[in-house]
Length: 170
Image (cartoon, rainbow, N blue to C red; front, side, top):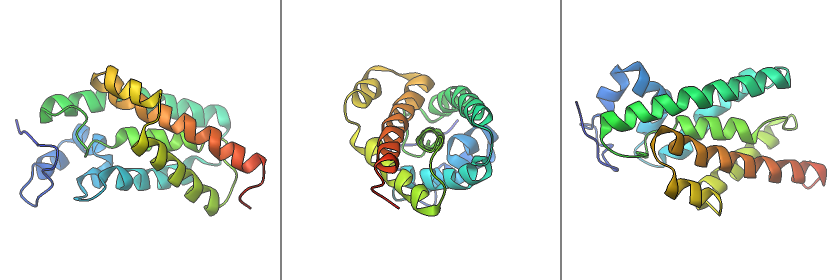
């Protein structure tokens, strides 16, 4: 077993151990969560190739994949949290990946929208306005890790679609 403190991303950190375990590798967003700075941002960046693979999917399939990733994420994040001994370690970024995919549900086409969705999701994920902050504080375990990012993704989704509807971004 290895323990990892909130800021232990040094070269000798247990990130190496995390990368040897497929569960932790996924929870750490394919390794993106091992970034020494802004692991949540790097985790969200890791979601963009996944979005690009899924964006042409029928809506029902895109939503099903998000649901499956959410359910798997509850387990992945819970297991990794137990192993690390730290609740919602900053390197656990599977939740950011799912949250960004929620933001991008039925998003308009084009790189500008990928960028707008990215920025909006990061704003809501970092600032955690109510009720996101309430979920973040009151719900624990793998579900708690996942749900605040899904809520951030839902808030970003609404703003993204309002921006698109009112043609604020071309």
